[in-house]
Image (cartoon, rainbow, N blue to C red; front, side):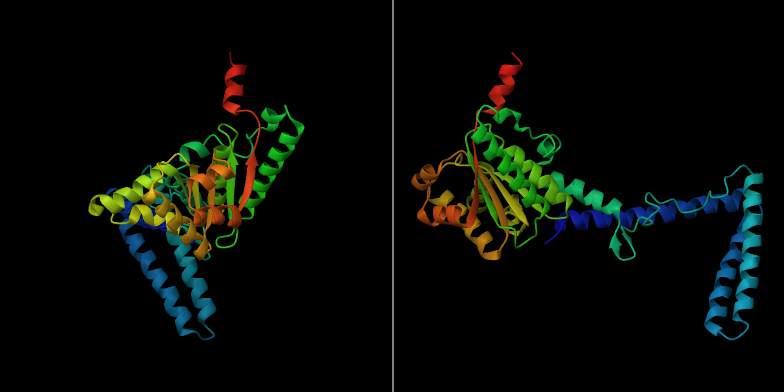
Length: 327
């Protein structure tokens, strides 16, 4: 699917507006020069005619074409020099009426030689971070600041957490829509599950994929509003659409939602639909496999334990460790 389509349409529109505004501003400055500096209007008119003469000479072809074009270009250069001298004489910079783009590389078009410009990629990445639902987390949580020091109390646990970080890193950096599979992060509170989810989301968004993060409670609330509320007030299906359409869905804190027939049906629908369409999902939960079994239907549990790669998070609550260090 690539970059979030809504973000792409919005940012593409912003680039079209920037491009148009840059040309309109240049036209206003040119009109100002025509009023303020005698002779510039006539020179600009001549420069316009010179451009047409070059095009006509090239289209006409023939042996004399090269000489004609050289002569026309010489006159063009002389006019440009005369114009620059007039502007300097009246206190204006030579490039006063030039088009001023925010990005000189792509001229505010967003593309260079058919490829997306770095400036537009940056805007899409920033927008992706915000629309993912993890913008505030990704600003502070990354692979670089995930510390394994908090797991040193037990060598085996530290080794397992090291494997988790390495696997998550490879997953994020090798992510491909439709083929990267699913992850199930299991373990107690404060062991780094959300941190690693944020780190993976950050990398995957930077690589150009559409990521959407949701808490289990918030996700079910969206489905409840869609099912029982006034759909016209809640986007007419747009809110729940992202749960099915995004390249990567991250569901945080599975098990904190109220469990009933409706919520279980919603969860199964999301998990099963995304599996069927090949779209990847990452789920993190404080529940153990046996607690999953007792809480959800066999259809859900068999898919979670059979179709998701499990990462077991171990150790002592990192938040509590940090608090004890600060007291």
